[in-house]
Image 1 (spheres, helix red, strand yellow):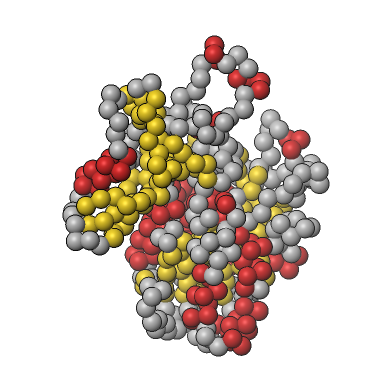
Image 2 (tube, rainbow, N blue to C red):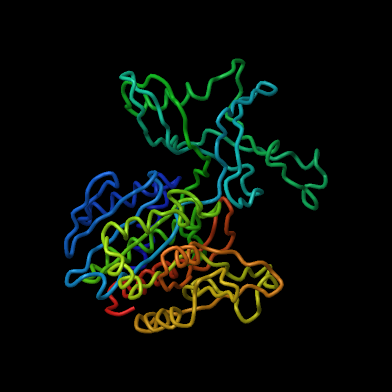
Length: 429
């Protein structure tokens, strides 16, 4: 696959994935096409050498793995890659209807560390999961996506807010409810969702019981720049890493034990049944390796690469970086390091990555946050502490992290995928 073909495939994936539910659905579809067998956590499992499998939880987290073709995992371990499916966004509240001055609006709750300013004056649609009661009295679930622009959050004109460019603070409660239209009546949001289900061909809908829905920007992902050096899209953090890990696994076609885990809820701390701080990964490993000694031996021979985007040096704000550790876009993936273990990288894991990157003739960069600034974190330290696996934190450099539209390099994702594909085939980690 060429770099251009890779990025076109990435754009399709991003377009299919306005929510974690849709991202997992898109990944599961690609895994099935590649011969992976879906397993249900509620069923008994029968795995075999060379088998390919995947599970999902909450429809928003996914683990895919391959059993080694020869021998047991205790002998060679697993080559693991981790990412997260969620992104900061605006989620619809349970009782969201607002009817003010003849306008129909929906109340929203901020999910994660959203950069709020860019959400104003964007064409917004709505997507997520609906739980409904069928006419037979059974609770069912269905993913929806309005696709078209149905809402907007209008800015207040500068004539009415002369300090907007110097000292405007955004009140998340009062400034953010999107406008869906003018109305003389008072629409019931659940009735709107019921009609959407019917329009989607869902039969026998009695009533909408609940939902998990978020607004998103309908502007399509695109390659931009004079030479199309960048990819601009929503949710690059961290669907970009999900796609990179998935493509690397599929293209590696490894004879070794390989694993990809993409968890939900990283942006809000990972503490959930489907999050990295929950038991999903450890429970899956216990089921395929029920003997504790075998499992511990396998993990001691395993390695996790936690892939989550990194902050590139912004040319207008270069002073926000340590001068010696400022990653540049399209100059290679970034090894993320932190003395206080906000990232899980160490010299052993970073050395292996540098070796693999050199073999692929791919550049590598390093990131350390300024010593006078707080450092973020990833699923890397969480997974390392949960299952005791040596871990590397790495990511593609990007601009505008947590904005409604982010920017990364068209070469970086492709090159990181090449290195991870080699990692999946590495005989010893």
